Image (tube, rainbow, N blue to C red; front, top):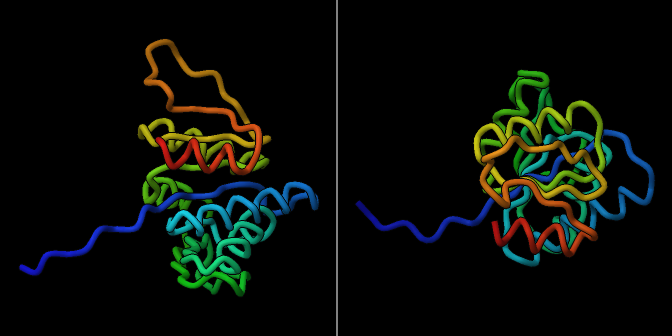
Amino acid sequence: MPRMGPKRHQIAVVGAARCDPLLSRKGEEVGRLLAEAGVTLLTGGRGGVMAAASRGAHLAGGRTVAISPSLGESPNATDEVVIATGMGQARNLVLVLSARAVIAVGGGWGTLSEIALALKHGIPVVCLESWMPELPDGAPEPLLQKAESPADAVQKALRS
């Protein structure tokens, strides 16, 4: 069997499908920094933070993969690969299990579910202006970290 080359690291960026311009800029910067680090960006293939991260990664020449909740195409023109699941919010599990780490930028209930699913499966989560759930005693550290900036979020995700 031929030897395969090293796999690119995959990091998911999750966040609200609608966000304010400041969170959009932060999402875009996270995407750009991940692309510059050679990471494949995974998102949920919707608007807001997900679209911003995809745009940032695309503009930096990175690979973008959208794991969409619908059966149709992602609304983001910068998504290079679209996996249309038709699973609705259940696709959150597919998204986080496909990632080495998750960066949450802002977000609502869907983002909280992605954070919880990642933590349940031992996938590190870095939160940038997002939910910071309290971990139970005995949880492995640093499974959940808070970031102060997009650069801090990316550095922590890459180290985890």
